[in-house]
Image (cartoon, rainbow, N blue to C red; front, side, top):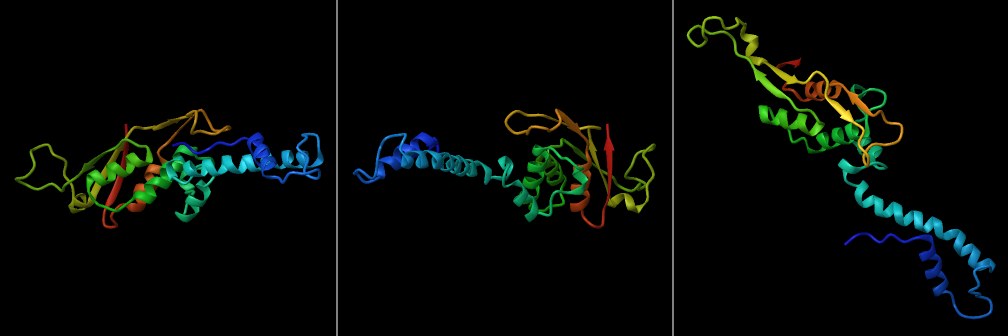
Length: 198
């Protein structure tokens, strides 16, 4: 069932129908009372439309008017997103932070990046050990056991999307600053994180 979408004329008609009968309650549209009711009706129609939009706006992935409240509760907007992040990017960052349940596995970090709108892979490293690696393998110190790498396209492009983007937003934006900031923030403290772009 969809939410009712009443127009100003619906409110005018309904309020006029609720008025008592008699000479002091004229039904004539040119009467002062009818004009006052007709003047107030657009406000009630706007409130109804805003209330209907609230059903969609309350969910972070589709939020527009309530997005600043979602961001404020999560410590956003993040300076990493730049001075004018896209609406989709802001929504994705809110959802990523809200749904972040924590983890240290490769699938967890790939999934978290996907929630932010990035497609990545993870490379894990190991220190060189005689008898475990082949000839020609890279030599590495013990620190390689705590090093991992995010592999991502050089520029992840976010395109203007009718229905979710807003007027004044760029037709396309790109960059991986949000990916780097978010993953650096949640990486295990004892690890070293590298980013490789291709």
